Length: 234
Length: 250
Image (tube, rainbow over all chains, first blue to last red; front, side, top):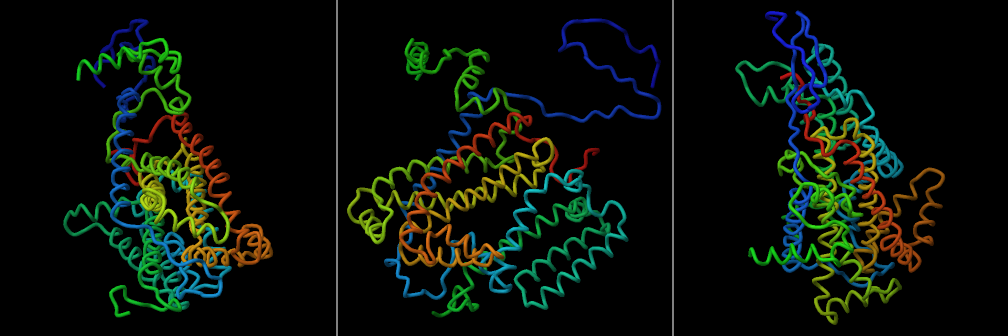
């Protein structure tokens, strides 16, 4: 701090010119001000116009798709003739793929319930709020912890032959390890990996697993839920 | 163009317009505020918004686009209801009528179905985008929970609609799905009976899914959507702050 008399005391009624709060900064701390992007514009017309344009573009796109491709319609429902495979809508095919590996009470009830509960409680856990880079503190302890978690998860998935989840798990785990050590030469990617918190990794793992399972269920499953190649001979 | 705008301004200044929309015209920010504040639908939103929240890169407009899909689905859905009977096997015959008898019937069904798929995709994308932006953090935690509820409602809406064409695809997809319910410990068989109105997917199931799809679930969706939007305003507007994993001191 410079000259302690480097200010003048005054009173003013204009709140935009005169600060309302006064901060006394002692010698040991520095006044770090978080930059704020608080510039505000009118909702009407600025936001509403953009919303209208976005919805118009969406409508145009969907109209175009609807003109080019017809919605599927098969024969009249017949409870006697079971198609093989009988598939759920695409957004449930990840679930159906899980049912292939696990008994129904695990794949169809336990796992979906845990996923929904897991999503609901996200904002109520401190770890998701602070969201500090995973490797920033206690690296040695976390390396051991991560190795154990990945190993246990991988072994149990391999035990049940769930390769569709095993491979993404190893992939995400491997990328996490990559972020643990500072790179030999500065690398933006490694820096980025280093800064990511645990919730980021869990959610990314969930996202990659969900996409993998859905894609397998949609494109790679044929009669009897056997593996087929989408480009393979009929 | 200028003349047209003048005439529009004159229209908005007329007694009839003002009696309908309560606000008048004018370029002042007060008038712009009143346009939002005095409208029963728009007043869910705040009068002002952070400029950064309007950038495409911040939200990708995924929430807006999800709402857009919902609106398209309501309009096309009501039109489809005019041609649809929730009975076996008339429901399937109605699909054929849409195909061969109703003008633009195929287009109507296409638009409804593709918008439904788009909505499921967009709602999922919206959820992940909100997560990676860190926008679920306090004070917005409960709006995240409402969002999870809306995701579930979206999935159930799409799933109940899947049965309505009453073709092989519909019948067996719902059979596969409802069999999962049987795996619920203790209550499984009862739950399945409650949803289907029988032990198999039959005419009762079609009627139940129809009522769920056209009345119950849309009403639930509208109520939660209203709370979802209103909470954006109450929780301090769209989140434009730090992403997850970004350090505050940088």
